[in-house]
Image (cartoon, rainbow, N blue to C red; front, side, top):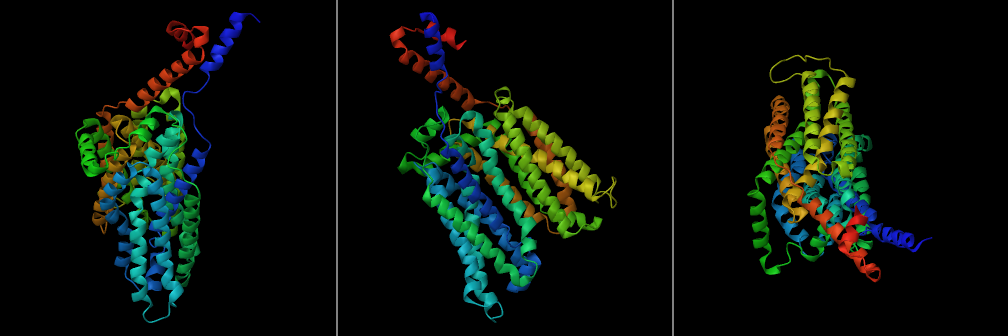
Length: 486
């Protein structure tokens, strides 16, 4: 072969060397985090799908069961700023995951202790058990920020730019899957009130397994960064100035809240998913006048959750392709329009605030399809909003933008939890209004792709330096490199 041909071949081989490297461990990291997130949400919903059995077993009222659920957003809101500060310390992701694993384990342990120490027939069982149950739910609620805030940061730190949206999707929807599975299997396990401890023991076993996985292996970061954005996270954590943690945090919050694009998009995401979460929780009440059972409503909710996961994974894969990496706005808009149409279909199939008889046919098939499509399209948009916020606020840490978004979601959810009792038709109408408003907000939002553009610039620069450095003996100059790159 001619020398010129050999030289060209060697240059092409050097060009194929990746500027950044990813490691197989990233899939284990994502699995452990997703497992913890799955457990956290399933434990949070423990008593709501089995409310009647819980009331009988612990001799409590419906208000107490509601409080056990409401600890989630109540504790989430004050704990989120502390999580955000911890997450942006050096090795912050590792500390957050270990704290999540240990706190959820002790929360699960606290809930089973009364059943171990006392028999449910003991006259003081209820008064003894309730404090332990509340402590367990509060510990679990405090873990909420630890599973929601790090999702974008974990994907950025461990995954390549063309994998990030899918990794974020998995991390987000593991939590959703926990709620879906909880609603589906909890009533099957607790067929009688005396079987409540069985469910608590299952949760304890899952929490123990996840804790072991986390303690055995969960490194702070990969050996080398997979992207320029990950390099920034490793070298310059936001909390690097230890004496100014709160000042740095508040300064970054202010920067987010004075960026119009961020404010618009985070408000739309918070309103949409806070309202949507409250709405899906009312399926049983909304469908009762149409003569659907609680079991059927639970399966509609489960189907909607699974559809959301499918939608998120499908659109996340599309958003990771080179052609659509700068098309987050149009993908989000298409998803929300699809979600709006599905909600309209559902609302025309049930009684509403304005009419006492459904307009379209109301069958298991039509309700299942409408709720499934609403879940599919809302789920498809969710990880894209997380990623778009991280893009807009780069180089601020991804956990900060995610934290503000989930704080909005929990505030809106908490408001709707107080509005919802005896106002289910109003909530049914508001979800339609909110979805429409969110579409308008996103239409006027300006999307930027600072992180992806910087990743691409740094990648090309690093490849160029590698090629020029490794072939300096062949006297390759910048013009020759550009010709090879083209």
